[in-house]
Length: 64
Ligand SMILES: [Zn+2]
Image (tube, rainbow, N blue to C red; front, side, top):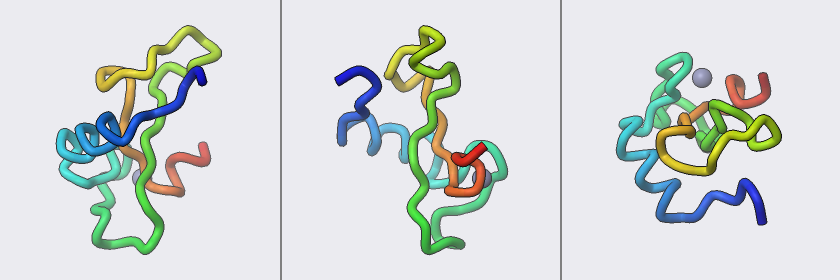
């Protein structure tokens, strides 16, 4: 499935991001909602599902 993010990629991203939202710097420990990987360049715009094109985002940032 295009755009699916593997568990390996998710945990690598969490490590790189320091478990912090990469947009507003909200730490994972400050929210009950799980931070989710966000495509920097959307898949429908040709973005790849790889570490370089993913940012860890809190629920609030992810909705934008
Ligand atoms: Zn955020």
